[in-house]
Image (cartoon, rainbow, N blue to C red):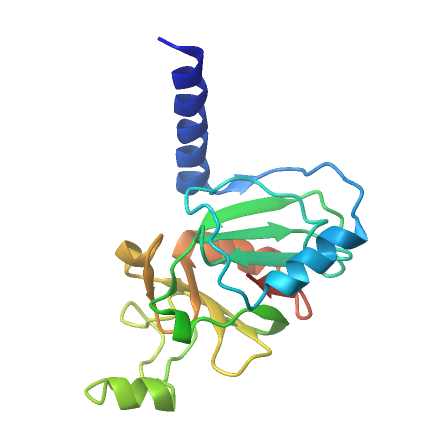
Length: 201
């Protein structure tokens, strides 16, 4: 068995464990360069193709100036959410669902403005136009598309939330929001604060 095969197998197994249980890791500090921040900012609205198999741990420095109130990075290409606590002692890496199409995808900087356990759901006007058969309202519970917990963002209609339909995770399957397994949104919900920074790339 080759060393290359061993390395690839070990990496895949580590990713599988992270996806199954959620990775809680301490991240070492790296020096941030101004150039790396400029590069990230210029890429926010581009269609630059990233490696779709890049479900791997990242450092926060290229994406944020600091981790005040915590920081959430969502990579819509690798379909992964990264979270760093304010003191950087906690790092979480979760697989996500992402928007179905590019026109439903929003990128840029926002923040958590509201946290809700047992969220209600109402389709947006655009959703109603696309799917007139959908109900006007869904109460909290097992049929709710927002799952058990939701982090509301400063962008209207955008959320990071759970889902009861686990088939959606790892796929292009949402109408704009970022979805997590219910167990993992509950974990993220416990760490995230009002004002936690969020960056979607």
